[in-house]
Amino acid sequence: MHHYDLIVLGTGGVGSAALYHAARRGLRCLGLDRFPPAHDRGSSHGESRIIRQSYFEHPSYVPMLKRSYALWDQLDPSLLVRSGVVYFGPTGGQIIDGVLASARQHDLGVDLLAENALPHFRAPAGFTALFEADAGWLPVEQCVLAHLDQAVAAGAEHRWGEAVVDWLAVDSGVEVVTECGRYSAGALVVAGGAWSARLLQSLALPLTVHRKHLHWFRCEDSRYQSGFFFDLPQGQFYGFPAAGGRLKVAEHTGGEPVSDPLSASREPSALDSQRIEAFVREHLPGVLDERLHHQTCFYTRTPDEHFIVDRYPGRRNVAFAAGLSGHGFKFASVLGETLVDLATGETPAADCAFLGLSRFQQP
Image (cartoon, rainbow, N blue to C red; front, side, top):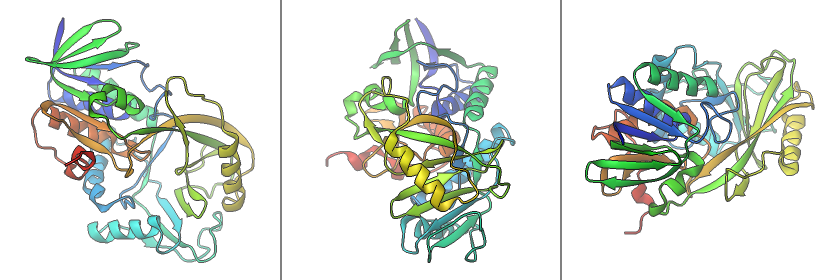
């Protein structure tokens, strides 16, 4: 049986980062995944993900984001594209009030825009528009590949096409059983994405998996150079700077529950398509009503929409991240570092105690 200092289960966004950080520390490490690098079967694909610091979800995320920004730049300065993000929403709504709260608490640069300052966007009357210049986007597949390539260059071993059957704690650390073999290690990181509930089944995590849709529309309007986020009565919608004659748009809210992400349909949803088309017609006047491409991904949600990042109860050498709830990829760099810290007994550089498992456990 091959023995390692640390094994990572799942090498998507967070797992690839964990493998990278483990290898950089000189640990003998192994990454295992059912799918090939930068695959399209989970959540870490689809060309782009927004990254922003004025975090409307909760101000406690901001220190993690600042560390994440630094780590993305350390990995490859070309990855984080600072194109800015504009937020539209009603005063008193989740997004506008949340952005302002994070900006005030952490002294972030957020500007109030004048009404009609951005005529290529059409917001409802009375909406507030805020602009965060230091926000932007990450090329998601390139980020995963960069972490994996640099991990392997630093000595990590990466095996894919090898599904994990189970793992168990033993006196020497952990053992992992796959369809192809058995491995042991002193420590374990679990970053299973939509498969987290099965890999951590004894914890009975309160996770639900939702199929989500990504759409690309024809756009020749050069004014769409920043990301955007709309908080509308019918839902929350977001998009990315236009490139190559097309613009990516998706809905953050909603989604279709699935029981098995492996067998879930990858086809478009008629209801989702109708909602996205209506959003584009109403709020993006410079974008043509011509869909060029579609992909699906998965949100693994927790009841409160916040991540779970912690050590496995009773096992100080096993750490996991689960339930990233559709807003986790921007944190992949810092979550990978944090999980290696937790699994090897170190204190994480960024405080993630507010994301602990205990909030879902009975007293």
